[in-house]
Structures are given as C-alpha cells and as structure tokens.
Amino acid sequence: MDKDTAEKTAAISGILMAITATIIWSWNYIIARGVAENIPPVALSFFRWATAFIFIFPFSFKGLLRERQAVKKNIRYITVMAILSVTLFNTLVYIAGHTTGAINLSLIAISTPVFIILISHFLLKDKTSYKGWAGVTITISGVILLICRGSLKVLFNLSFSSGDLWMTAAAIIFALYSILLKRKSHEIGMLTFLLVTFGIGTAALFPFFIIERAFSPAINFTPSVIISILYTGIFASIVAFFLWNRSVEIIGAAKTGIYYYTLPLFSSLWAFLFLGEEFKPVHLASMLLIISGILIATDIKKTLFR
Image 1 (cartoon, rainbow, N blue to C red):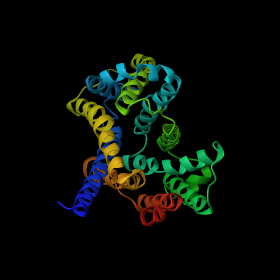
Image 2 (tube, rainbow, N blue to C red; image 1 turned 180 degrees about the horizontal axis):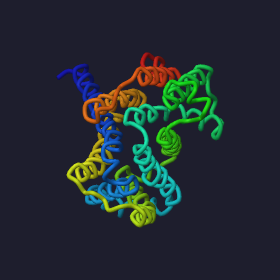
Image 3 (cartoon, rainbow, N blue to C red; image 1 turned 180 degrees about the vertical axis):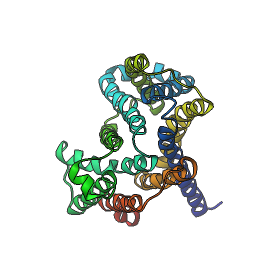
Image 4 (tube, rainbow, N blue to C red; image 1 turned 135 degrees about the horizontal axis):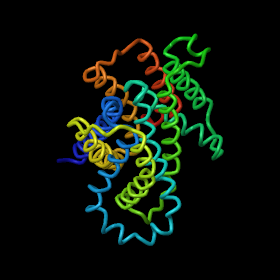
C-alpha cells in the first residue's frame, strides 16, 4: 500500500469513527425522552455514570496509580470538570427529556459551539470576528425559533417548554466544560482523567439521587430502562469518547468537530422512527438556522480549505 492510499484509508477510518461516535451520542437524546416515564432523570444519570465508572475501572486503575501525584495536584480542576460534565450536563439533558422532544434536545445541543464563542469573548477576552458574531446571531435565532415553536405569540407571552430551557442550560455548561478542557494537565492520561471525573461526578450525584428516591415512586426497571442504562454507561460514556478521540488523532480536531453537527439529523431520524415524534417545518427551519450559524461562526470554509 503506497503512502497516498494509506493516508486516504486512515482519513476514511477517522471519518467513520467520528460519525459512529455522533450516532452513539444521538441515541442519548432518544433515551432521555423514551424512558422518561419509567426512571427519573437523576436516577438515570447516576446509574449511567456508575456503570461507566465500573466498566472503565479495570482499564485505567494502573494509570491512576502511576499518575496519582498529578491527579492530587490538579484535584480542584478535575472536580470542577467532573461536576460540569457528569453531575450537571447529562442530568440536565435527562431532566429536559421529561418536558421536550428528542428532536428539540439534539437541535439545542449543537448550539454549544456558539456558547463557546460567547463565553470565550466575554470571560476570556478572546477576540471574535464579525463573521463569528454573525454566526452567533443566526444560531441564537434558530434556538429562539425552536423554543417559541415558530409562534411570535408564544415568544411575546414567554410561554415555552421548560425542557428547552433546561437543555439550553446544559449546552452552556458543556461549552464551559469544553473551554476548560484545554487546561487539562498533560501529566494526566485520558483514561485516568475519565476514571477520576466519573468517580467524583457520580459521588456528587449521590446525595441528589437519595433525595429524588425519597420523593419519587419506585423505579420501574423494565428491559428498556436496563438497556438504556447499559447503553449510556458503556457506549455513550466510554466507546463514543474513545472513537471520537481516535478520530481527532487521525484527522484532527477541527475536521472531527464538523461531524458533531450531524447529531440532530440522526436524533431526528430516530425520534421519527422509534418515538413517533412529528418532524414539523419549524424543526427544519431551526435546524437550518442553527447549523448555518455554527458553520459561519466556526469558519468551516477556512478549516476545510486552508
């Protein structure tokens, strides 16, 4: 196999890994909506991350022992990251799934890059181009259109789904997590980082899990709920992350990130096929606005053709 063929094969494998990771993550929003009646959101989040911690432990414990001094030195940072990603982000997604559809969840989720721009500009003083601000404006317009269901009356009366607001909060939290991820110490390997964040985040969730159990009916552990816990714990929390990082290693972070924007396409398909959700014109319009805004804000043309 010559060099060009090898590079093309590697690039194709990287693309397939990124798409597969996105497909795995897209099911998370279907699960958030599909099992909402059988298991409350904090319980689903707690069992998901406890499962992820148990499954990743055998593969990362030796690394933790080797890197324990670096972990101890960066424990405050790791704790913040654990609370943002494990304790808050996915729990808010599951809370949102009780009052809004899977299509809305995935559409609002991909507004995260815009919130990254906003947070970077106002808190970190990173300069944003006019093109970036244009993309921000277009994407926010798409989110507002989605929240108000395309009705000016709804917008003026501020009558919108609480789930859409919870999901927007989750997107902001994930944006903050993504920005802070750049500050991860190189002394800490990714498996060690995952193990510790899974552990701390799950421990932080435990008190809320106990409170929810005290005021909620018994969990109905149907086959679909058990499968959902295993799926989110193993695939969405471990496998997808591994595939995504391998894709970044092969084709680079910028090109890999482009495929994340296909998430609402997959989620919409699954919601239509398996949950019976109706795909309305307002969903299409919102999707086009959000994706267009993100492509402009992140200057995809420059990324692809530089």
